[in-house]
Image (tube, rainbow, N blue to C red):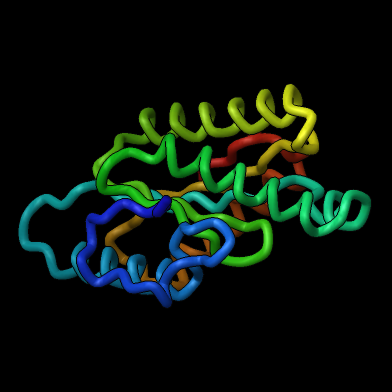
Length: 176
């Protein structure tokens, strides 16, 4: 199963994460740069773009206490939930370890918030109900693309939002 939306024809196998089948960091970087270029070169109204960073709470403990095969199964599960709930034109990526990124395109702030909440609830509920998974939650930091943004600025803002989420107790969503 491929866990990326084919809204870009230039995705190749080296852009895919082997474990989760989501776009990897290279694929994410490429898609974010492409979206930024499209937004900066647009003459007319362009769709809204949001970047959400998603981190599995206390994931190191899962690997340390249950082993890497269980950790891998958790990452595959989280990837599937994200993929299943990501709308058309948007894409979920695994950008490293237990960190994921979602590029939302053509969604309102309320739609993004609702989708992220559904992801958070699904992961919390399913991992708590299944014996083959370790109960886990996710922390999310999200930001909206601004006209003056470049790759670094939007990524840093989303990262700061994720950091605030972790400082405030995890298992939350922070918009910045």
